[in-house]
Image (cartoon, rainbow, N blue to C red; front, side, top):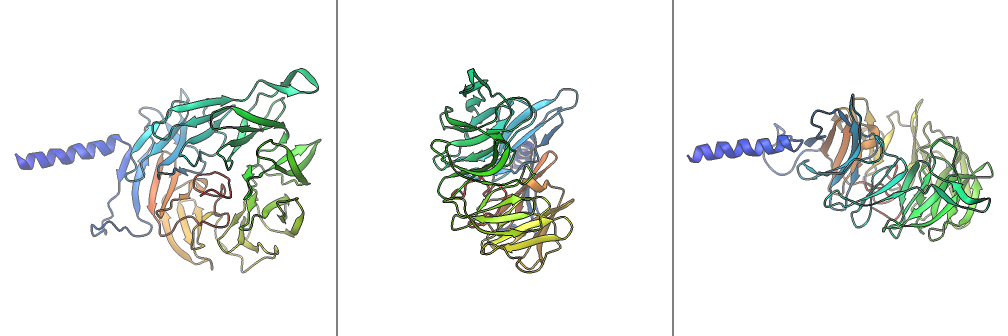
Length: 416
């Protein structure tokens, strides 16, 4: 009878893991201790989809304040399933919750996690606030149909797609309208209660918004058909300063050096270090980058990728090229040892500062999906799966080590 009970218990536990959409991976070389080897797969989570075909969105995963992993998925064949946000337990990869459907089949921003754990996402014309404990929507904010405008007594048409979500110092959400269509674009600030605090009309680009060390809002936008890098007051949205800038790329990020200076593109091949107080240039340098994405490691080296030659690194002190060009793929993030995580078609490789390979993971993953948690786990996604991989470091706590700065995707210099 005792033997039968043990067998039944094993069957029940195995069945529960199957139903939860998670496969725990047992390394055949693992001696049974709680310490895994670097590069080992800890678990694989599969999107719960029933008879539907769902795919994980190719955006960065997000790690919550309690270690929960968040992703977005949508899909279908005959009947398209709108996007939802999913929460996964960090210990075993089981599903924690999934939200009700968002507005459309796609999301318009990274998943952002606030200091209190609240989850935020943009989808088409709406901003969603999600309870991290249950996945229930706290509130949903929608772009106004019209906004007050001095030239339009009945208000200016302002209804359009939103993008570029960033988390302000006080928890406010900063984003903008930037989709196609005939309407007035605006930069918005919405508070944690779901009420709009301010807006400012802009000629928007799709570039991400960055929050600097002093809480100032930085973004690429236009005014009178001229493109600028602008600094805005987070309390009012008023313009503090602006300098001419045009990148031509919708995903060029604005980064912040450890002393608060901005490192940003002013033209397609022109990178600059900028005084955040007044927008004055500290230096400007011609650089090689095919995608205009900027990372900064813990030593202050600016890392960029060129599809023809590889990784180029530049001094943040004077903009000069520093060291050899590394013939390795584009880096998705940098850990606190300065190692670069580069995605290839069938996995990713981790490289040391000198370009030598440290360790690898074999398995197709989205390049944009990689995040590193504070407990040395690398999370990546592809298709309908999320992978947890044992790493040996955390995401760097200084510099600008990931596209959205941190594993909560805040685009805020002061958040980790």
